[in-house]
Image 1: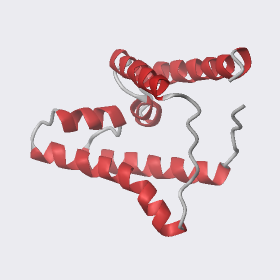
Image 2: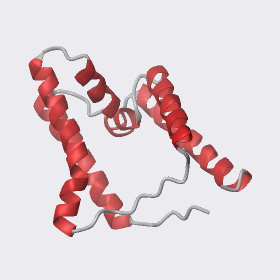
Image 3: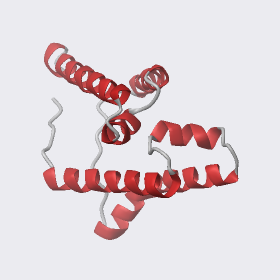
Image 4: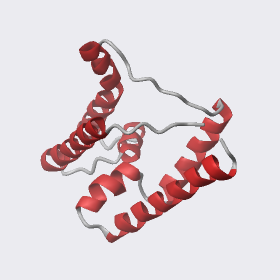
Length: 144
């Protein structure tokens, strides 16, 4: 059985940094910090200035763990209790959800909620309910 560890300090710090990054990006570039929108803009950029800030954000996401290891000498333990096939299927389903939902959890949940966007509020409520049901079914019905 998977055990969820309660980490309030790390969660608060991470959430504050994500919020700060979203505010800085909106204040300096006028852009919403949605991860899938940033990645999509790298694949189909609207010019070099649009591409460069997106690459900078993506590099920050990728180099974060390396910085963590440099500062602490260790990386957090990550357990992925599913097969590669399940990860691929999950990624595919997330891609479908992002497409039909017009954005991802970071865009709707962090930035859209902060702007009181009705679409983002509805999307975030949907994410949370679906997540709760999924965790319940996987842990308590299927026993994984």
